[in-house]
Image (cartoon, rainbow, N blue to C red):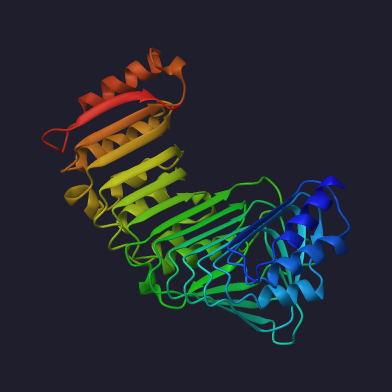
Length: 381
C-alpha cells in the first residue's frame, strides 16, 4: 500500500496540466485497473518523456491505449516488461509529431482493424528500438521516419505460436546511420528500405544466433534480402553467416563502399564470396573459419580488395588447422597493400604447442605479396 499511496500522492500533488517526464517502475503485481488509472492520469498531462517498466504481465485498457496514441507532445517513450505488455491498436495510422526516441520491450500490439497495415508517422524520430515485440494481425508495418538514424531490433525469443511470422517492416527514412538485428536462430520479419540510398555510409549489424532446433526456413531469404538492401554500407558485422549458402552470396550486389567487414564463424567459400563483393575493403575480422575445400583457393579469382585496399586482417579463434593455414597463405601471397595480420589463438595452451610452432614456421616461409607488414600472435580474451 505504501507504493500505491505514494503514486496517488505524486499524481494528486502534481497539479500542473503538463509534465516534463514521468517514470513508473512496477516491481510487484498490482490490479490492472489501478495501473491503467495511473497511466491515463499521466497521459492526459501532455507528458513529454514517459517510461513505464513492469515485471509482470499487463494490458492497456481501451482508454489507456486511446490516451497513449493521442499524446501528441511525447518526445521519448519507453515501455518495457519482462513478460507481456498488451496494447490494442484501433487505427491504421498512428502519428507522434514530436517523438524522437521509441524503445519497446515485450510489447504485444494487437491490430484491431481490417486492413492489417499499420502506418507509424514519426517525422522527427531518431531512435527506434524493440526487444521481443509482437505485432498481432499485422501484415505490413510502415514507418514514415525521415530523420531516423538508429534501428535496433532484438528478437531472442520465439513469438507465440498464434503469431504468423510473415509481417513486413518498411522504413521510409532518409538519414539512416545504423541498422542492427539480433535474433535467436532466425530473422523474425522481412525488412525493407523504401529508399535504399537512405543507408548510404550506414552500419549494418546482423546477428543470428544459431539454435539446434526450430530454425526458421525463411531465415536465409530474409538475411539475403536484408544484405541486398544495405549494399551501400561502410561497415558490416554479420554473425551467423552459416545461414547463407555460397550461391546466395554470389547473387549479392557489390558492396561498393564497404570498408570494414566483421564476421562470426564463416566458411571459406562464403568468406571468399563476400571479399569478391567488397572491392574497397580495408579491414577484415572473423571469429573463425570452418573447414572448406582447399582446392577452392587454387582456382578462385583473387578479390580486388586484396590487391588494392585491404590493410588489416584479424584471424580470431585460431586452432592451427591446415585449412586456416591455407587461407592465411592465400591472404599473405595476394595482400599487396597489407599492413597488419593479427592471429588470435583460441586458447593459451596453443601458445607453445607443436601445432602452433609448425603453423608459424610454415606461415613465415610463404611468399609475401606485401613489402612490409606486422604479423602478430596473441590470444582471444
